[in-house]
Image (tube, rainbow, N blue to C red; front, side, top):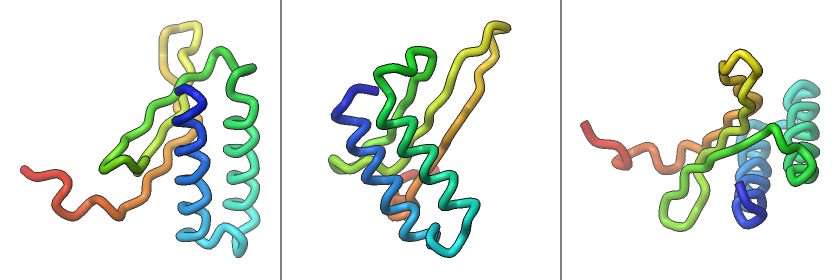
Length: 91
């Protein structure tokens, strides 16, 4: 993920926290601090990679992961905002 998409992911994280009322949950509040800390240090965390889902120029989901030495994948974070679920995916 490059800097442009990190900014989008941070925006999504902020919206997600408002939606999930992170301020009322010490667990979600702590998780939010970690997600923000990881994105702010992104360039120094060379083992991590990420991906985002962009719909109509807006990030609606992201993931942050890491490939482990045994070639398995460790997902650190996944966040999504459901505003685009209706009608976005059709069978």
